[in-house]
Image 1 (cartoon, rainbow, N blue to C red):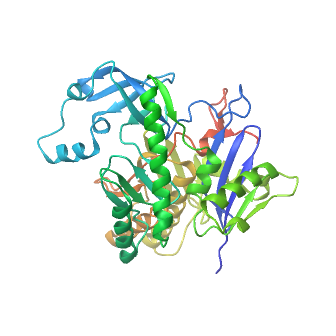
Image 2: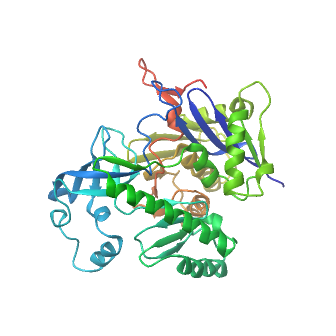
Image 3: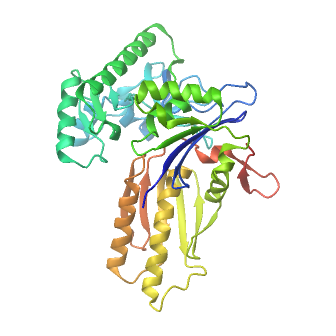
Length: 424
């Protein structure tokens, strides 16, 4: 059976939206809203990946953390692990313990930090001194001093080749992580990517030496650039954009970042809404619902807090076969596939607890956890299946890429507290 994987981008006065469809099914989503008070400008708060020069405001020994003024409305949070030099952090973890935060930072001290978690929920941004700059083929880390390879590259011979290339192109104290897109690429393409990122870091460092804190040193690329960089995978067969202006921008970026694939890009010429035409708006609304139906007749209930996501699986109307255990397993297997997809679409992060329907068979529980492991390997964000708890719940952790992805297009009703999509 042939499959069609499409990347769609839609621009409106509210913002920019991107979606990936796999045979018409929504499997990934990203958005960037515009500031309603400044048309054409990104909504305030979208600071993930930005680099700042910050000033230490408070040092809290009891929390082994510090608060920094980086120029945002709320001070940023810096934990001790993110304040230590990357190599020092590894050595300290292997020895007696970490130094006190008071021995590392002091009020008034200035340092260069990068946002690793968006501000939200009454909290400021979380920042780190471990800078990483993502490129098309690799991630450049000025002080990491190691070479990593994406776990999604399974061929051990290719992994070893990339490690050797990484060691050759990095300078002392530098680190690189070969992204999945680096699979099979020639050495010179990887070297060029590392060189351009090194030049970017040198420019950021130069600016840091000239500015006083708080100051912005580097802004993460906008959504269009990030989408082409991160979502235009090798299996994407078609890129469709909503208007001519966006078509020119996307075509230019594809030419620069993925030369030879420009022919995949086309402009949507019809008058109706691109996302409505491909059913993305409908699928997005269903994906955001608290209760989501399974094809078999079962359903899942999805509850999400700031740091914890709880998912309950139910058989519903699905009566299955004469074998109860088989009915339960089939419902759980279908739910696992849906949950893995919705983790990407909703960009759920932190701790994820799934209450699958109780199974008597240890073999079936093992099959479900293995299925989740296989499905989450397709996730662009780091996702780990921790295993079954003593209460029979499946525990997963997932690194959240941004504070809001799909939910950024959602508003809360002032009367009933329900949530729904804003019209595009």
